[in-house]
Length: 408
Ligand code: NAD
Ligand code: USQ
Image (tube, rainbow, N blue to C red; front, side):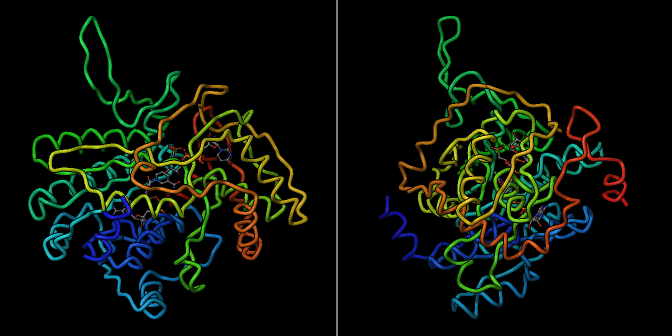
């Protein structure tokens, strides 16, 4: 499998990274560029507008995209092409696809926060419209302007929910009334955001079938961490680091909470178990998928995660790592703003990326301590009022003042 990676690197694939200004997209664009691929970023920069809408910020100071890319060229000698525009703008998208003739289209460019999608009707509709429309446009652009391009689409482990059986990689063999079939694994998503990913998966599978498109749906777990080898090369290349209750994800939030002296916000009893991976593995998984493409007409699904933990287990690990740095972190069980299962079964299969050669970076105290150190360096930028969720209903619900700010 290393052979496929080496061959792809020698050749240098033409790869579009849509959402290349985001948390996963930026380090992926740098990593692919470093390996010798020709990278074009597409991004509308909407995530930076959403930060303003929510009065939120990345705890690390991220430069404007054009300055980040200029810094990359200076540091690495490699150029990344940037096209600012929205995937909902089909004229823009089709012009970029026609011009670049990508061999792989890596699609990160979606609204990815479950809490954001649950603020109110407008945010639910925004999320589903952005995600479903964007993916449909990408499918049509590939069909019409680059039919051999391999779509590498970011899905989510949350599409499956938490069933009381093992979670397979996309499909399950079912025997029913004496007959058998291989069918898409049942989906039980937990937010309008997670539902948008299910709709995307169905649309992609259908497009592969009728148009012979090659696609890989990467059902990614929760990504933690901050740095990759490339973002470490210069402070101007630093990745975004979300910690607020809307875009911050469990482990990264706990690390920043420990760094700023806020008790770790475990929702409910903390027995909710989820799948996780380090951002350093995200970038490698994307290259593995690009270098080992799906066949024309094939819709394949990889479960992209390396380990599973309950939220309580994560918090305990952060407390232990913090104590090695002399930080006395505390755990606070707060009322859960989400409707979620507790004490549920969770066992998901994740062999396909490992079979292609992924060597996981596991969650060790050392890894946590490194991220904690960075969080501590930037702790002064964290706004305490963004950390606690404001609960008024049993659904994810943003408090009235925040909601008004979000809308105005
Ligand atoms: P992010 O919000 O940091 O980045 C998304 C980027 O896409 C932003 O730069 C944004 O400006 C851009 N974008 C959004 N909509 C766009 C549009 N219509 N047109 C052009 N650009 C657009 O998100 P992320 O954490 O990097 O997540 C990237 C992808 O990975 C998402 O699809 C998400 O669902 C998936 N994912 C993320 C995680 C995680 O833990 N972060 C886990 C599983 C899956
Ligand atoms: N949680 C806490 N405390 C917090 C934040 C979260 O206990 O302060 C809990 C939540 O209740 C939930 C779990 O941690 O049980 C995960 O929540 P999260 O916010 O870290 O992750 P989630 O909402 O699932 O979304 C994130 C990304 C999303 C991606 C998803 C992968 O934002 O883009 O799709 O992880 S997955 O969870 O596999 O669906």
